[in-house]
Image (cartoon, rainbow, N blue to C red; front, top):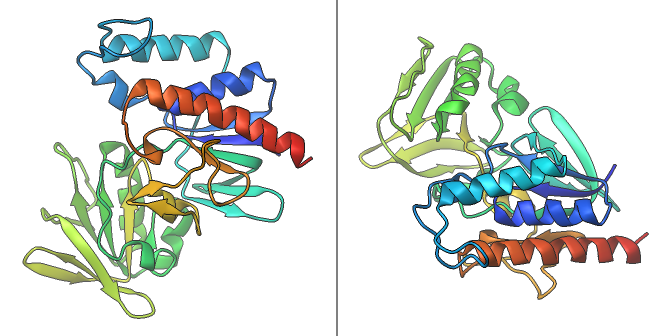
Length: 283
């Protein structure tokens, strides 16, 4: 079991990882190994202390070089659920599970807007992990909202299992080759049903489905952690960056504005120290 699990590899996650390493804690870092795609795409950053007029690419390289110099590793995993399992937290990532005493959420801001009523059908037809839940839909009809080319292998996995797979590619240059996958060039806006999901709605139409898989790099905090308090879509935190769930902390853009790298780095630092303080009190 780990002392801390960090979710997210933006500036807040990087800062949290560096501080936990310095503090000698046993932690796991779950995210994409690509250190902050958002940082790397910034043309020019003027307000980062000590690095005037730095480009996003230069800052991302500096972050990456720093964690590599400290031998800090990122596990390339998409976390689809965080559960309080009595004195510890269980994190689901694909078919794997990890346990930690505390969690720091550095998930950033979602780049893909949630569908209307999406969260109310999580576990009742909406899933974020093809390899975890795909077998439940063998010989059934499913829809897949795919946000990135890197998830296409999961789409094809679902197409092999299902009776029919409708795919909503939310990016250019898709190459989904399965004959059982029908491409739908519409933007889904809503899901509906009774006890279970029954329909996916888009402008001008709807599809009858048994399940919807939403494949994206980050999941909304309230869907990721049941019972997590949010305000306006952002995680509600106290000054020490603790959330309403004891042992879970949050840092960076996921806690709200200002959406700046310096703010995210500072919050990652605070969250790491708060998690360590929590561990010392709750031995």
